[in-house]
Image 1 (cartoon, helix red, strand yellow):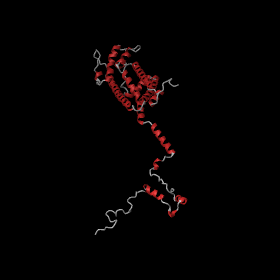
Image 2 (tube, helix red, strand yellow):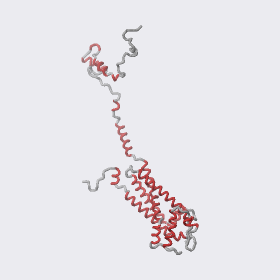
Image 3 (tube, helix red, strand yellow):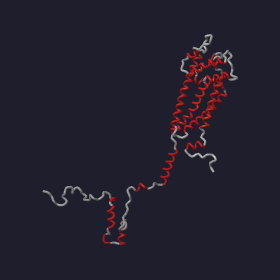
Length: 331
């Protein structure tokens, strides 16, 4: 049998609260708030008594709508002034902080710049051009055993070429005089092989350092003026090192020369007799002139780099992005 009574239709029994049209939250019931305050107070009180009763209940006067606080209202609240100032200071400090990578590159540039310039100067001195200038300069001591300036230039060029090529020790060991005697003794050839190992190692290291400077140039392009500051620091370090080495050499050249050889060569492998070919080609005066030439080249290069990279106020302003005011433009 079917129940025909009202409320027995399918689905009418699922709303247990019997309030399916009401909003789920109190703050969404705007109409309910209006209706609640629009009705007169119980007992027919009106006028001032009704308003007093409404005020006693913490409600607004009849006819006015009470505005409930928004759940998101706290998002617009300003934090305490101390927090605002602290966060502002943190943002300013983060903006002023410089990345550490450019600083590391600049330190490496300052440390490696002297070595790069030194290797370049040594390569210039170890050339036939310097040999020719040295053997033909006034006051250079002659050979007491018969070598002319042309003989010296010819034989010394073999020794200098050997330091830069990839030939074996036979390059020097097979050289002979016109009478058939060997130009260099076995001890001299062995020492030149040791010198070649040191020189080629220095050239290889110099090539790696040059590659580092090229990569540093591209790596510091976004940091305005960073590469120039690294070169400037390196030039100052180089000037300081040259000054220290000059003082040491001036105080005792022979001691300086001896200690330098002891760093790279074993004792007894780099000392020869006065009549040996290496001494006749490269006497003590030659090495003094070579050291002075290397020092002058390194010092001159460092001074030029420091001048072109000097952080003047105009350059600092340009690197910082500030407008540069020409001299005399101010009124």
